[in-house]
Structures are given as C-alpha cells and as structure tokens.
Image (cartoon, rainbow, N blue to C red; front, side, top):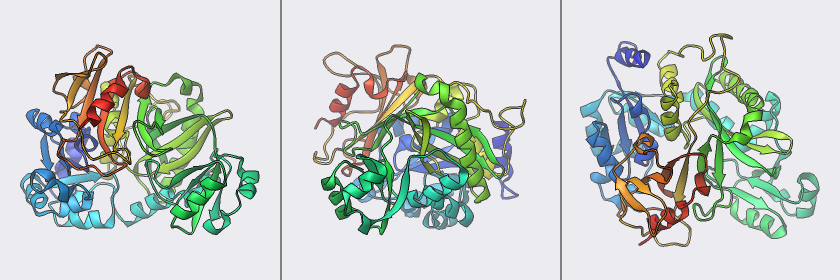
Length: 454
C-alpha cells in the first residue's frame, strides 16, 4: 500500500488527501478501509455497523444522524455531499480523494464545494461510461469488439405489438430491456402477448433491446481498464438473480457467490471477452473499475452488459482480494486515477493474467423490501449470527467478513436500523457468508424472514 499513500501524499502539489467512499448504505461504502485504515466513509442511512466501524477507528459520517431519516432516505450521493452537515464534516477531515458508485456532473459540482477531488470523474470518463452502460448502445459496441452475445437487436417500442413476429426472430422466451436500469429495473421476461403488452405499458423510452433468453448461469466479473486496455481482473462470481424472497424483480440481482466450480473451464474465454471490453473502454477514454455481466449457456459464456463504474459486488470482493494477498481492484482504481497504474499483474508476460487468482469461496445475498409488504422490520442489529435452530442467534458485533469464525453456520448481517425508511424494491440489508452456497445456504431464508419481521 505504500504507492497509494505516496500518491495521496502529493496529489499534484495539492497536499495530502485521505481516500473517501460515498454511498447510500455503510456496507456499500465499506471495503477500502480494510486496506487503507485512514479511509473516510460517508453514507446516507444508519446501521449499527456504523458504530462498530467507529469503534475500530474508522472515520464515518452518516447523514441520518444529522437530519430526519425520512428526509434522507430518498437522497442521492450528490445530495449527501450538498448537505451542510456533510460539508462541515468534510472540511474537518479533508482534503479528500472521493469515490462513489455512479459519478455525475452534479456529484462533481458538489465535490467542488469541498476540500477534495473526484476519483473517476471528468467529462470524457462520464461520457464513455454512459455510452457503454446504455443497453441499446452496447449492441453495436459488442459487435465492433467481436464479443460473444445473445441474438439481440435494438427495436422501437412501436414494433412490440406482434409477439409472433418477435418470437420468430428471438425464440418464444425473450428478454426486453430499456436503455438504462440496474438490479432488474426496466428488464422484462417475455413469454407471450400479455407480457409484451405489459412492456409497452411500462417502458417510457422510444426503443428497447430485445434478446433471446439464454438459459444458464449468470455471473459477473470485475476488472480495471487503462489507456491500453485490461490492467487486471478478478475471479468471476455467480450472480444470484430473481429469488422471490430476496427481490420483487423477476430478473433482479440479489447476491454473488465466489468459488463456483462450473466457471473454471471457461476462465480463459471469459478473460478474453473482458480484455476486449477493456480495450474498447480505454479507446473511448474510460479509466478504472468496470463490471461485466455474463450468462454461461450451452454454447459457452456470452456477454450481457457492462457497467463502467464501481459495482455492488465490490465491497466484499475487496475484502476477499485482500485476504488472498492481492492488491484489491478498488485500490488499483484509486491508484490509476492518481496517475499510478501499478505493476503488471503478470510479470512473465508484461500484461494482464489470462486466468484470475484464486479467492476464498464466499457469498453475499442482498435483501430488498418486497413490493407489497409494509416498511417495517425487526429491531435487528448488524453483526455475526448463527443460522439454524428455532431462530437466528446473535453471536457478536461485526462489520467485515473477517469477523466470521470457522463455523459453517455463521453469517455476517449488515442491516439498516429499524427506524430507517426503505422504499419498495430497494435493499435494506446484506448477508456475508463463507462458502459459495449463497441463497442455497441452510438457514438463510429463516434469517431473511427474521430480518423482515415487524
């Protein structure tokens, strides 16, 4: 970590900066502090994990401790930094080198009123990220890069009237997506005329992406793009999607599992696809972290989309990479923005490794408020719980994966305080576990129901 501290100590003559991560919930902001303990975490809504991190010496700001939780809940990262209480805090602890999951012009303007700078910002960076993240644009980007993809096309909404015509082109089951949307938003499974009519009612944009449904395992890869292409990438994680007791969205993402053996024979092909995307991103002016979503079908791995930004799997991935003795991708993202791309990850070839390093099998599940349930939850606290038995049992405080012991029935819960509002369809808790079982873990569903109790 000396290179990071050296880069943060100079910042082009602007003096020493502290790294900072801004996110809605503390578990999204958390991760880099396990590598650089001086990292500042800034979040909107409260969790008892905030207190645990402070007890460990981590500097944490939580806006709902300074404003009414109901006023904070619908806020954005930019709005968080615009609040007078946040500005006062940042002036006290700054200057800061600030990262967030989805930078914007408004976010950059908010940072402009603080002592600090944005990591991963700038007009060219934002333009490239938005272009690649746009699902309609990505059809042509993938074609130009020679990526393996499903059969898909950009289709005008007014062309969605005849299910039979579309089924002849894409098969009887297809996926329709709007240009933007994450975690299953603006994504629909279509298997008949009624589903297609529902899409026409709900989609406000002029066009959509229609793709054949590729049956198989969804998974995601995190990587770093530089000017010359791929700098580094990490072990793929199986995506947990559409579990009805975790998310109300049929194709919504609700977790990850590292250590899935089914992916092992395909790693070189996966790395090749990630490398092609990184090259295209580099040519477009993007530098830093990005994620790629795949499906492993009968014919191999196909690319579904890319997210040129920090992604939801990153906080736990950072902890796993550090435990494996690797330089976490989040730290490389920071270094790259500070002008230090780091050493080659494969000294024998001078380029990115063709197969990622091993990571300890681990998993996370993301718990969302279901659409037709009240915004009421148990007065549960974050920490380590024992699964199974008549009810989950709180064992001890915790905030990081390393707080889990060796027992296979332990799980780390990170949950919003019961008084913090949650909108329908939004996440309010995460659960970390050893092993790649994720949603298949015995006793997990009972833990989720316990966290939902009013």
